[in-house]
Amino acid sequence: MTAPAPQPSAPDTSSSLADLRVQIDSLDQQLLDLLNRRAHVAEQVGEVKKREGTPFFRPDRVAQVIEKMQQSNGGPLKDLHVAAIWREIMSACLALESPQRVAVLGPEGTFCEQAAVEYFGGAADLIYCASFDEVFHATAAGSAQYGVVGVENSTEGVVTRSLDLFLHSPTHVVGEVSLLVRHHLLRTSNELEGIEAVLAHPQALAQCQTWLSKHLPHAERRAVSSNAEGARLAAGNPAWAGLASERAATRFGLHIVAHAIQDDSYNRTRFAVICLPQTLAMPPSSAKDCTSLVVSVPNRPGAVHDLLVPLKNNNVSMTRFESRPARTGQWEYYFYIDLDGHPSQPNVAAALTELRKLCAFYKVIGAYPVTA
Image (cartoon, rainbow, N blue to C red; front, side):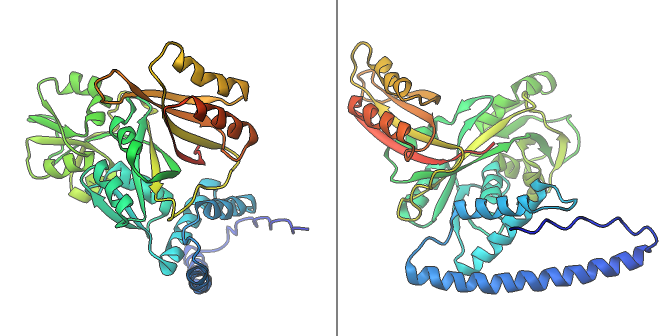
């Protein structure tokens, strides 16, 4: 039987600030000693994994450890902060076993970088790429073990280039990160006057169009490869501004002229974590999963309707349905579908089996735990 978590003691109001700092210093040293003991054990775990040939990074194991720590949390720390602390602890220990190389959209300061840090922790070895094409290529070629790519925004919809790249890439999705995205107007000077051009990723420009039309109606809107790239360019020209994150502002030494100017205050972007199947196989079923696939059907009446029948018959919910042209010149389409559930579930497995028989092209992009 698990012992109950100790209850926090009432604060000692008689202690001076100096006394409390002495206590904190002592506790910090104890924490450091314990963390180094954990790191030594992690190094031993790494040696075992090398001998057995098992994956070093196991996102399901990370999730299990964090959930366990949150359940045993009996103090004033919030569960959100417990998760952040333990993710960094595990990331640092994993770096001792085998540093994880992760390809992201660069330069430093992108939301893609932020999503990678949230998923892998700050000890991951990030490889900065100029485009999502390069992220897919680096991951497929093995120069990076994992990649992180944007797939969908709550305001502007899917990232079509990512969908197209999934079609023929040998990588699959093993996880996702849902990131609250706040676009700030960044500039070398802390004023709106004199801005001739605003540089950002096309989706960011679209997500801020109402604010830009009202406050900078005459400024050129110039699309670049990433928001951080726009910030980097704005750092070199006082007449330019970028739309990017606080990380980018810090990285390039820019002022935040206007905070959170996106049109939708609940502006979120989903990022997919990709890798080769030999790097990490399909994660096991969790409490809540998504199965993503891409299919095409023969160009005949009722073909798209027939795709939905196996889902209805097996009680499987479809959470996304997107079409992309097949570029054959024959007005044919690929359909990107997200299903609620995991292929190991009997009803999902039955639906996929029936669905596959109807398709001229069929590919499971991945099955992975979804974020809240």
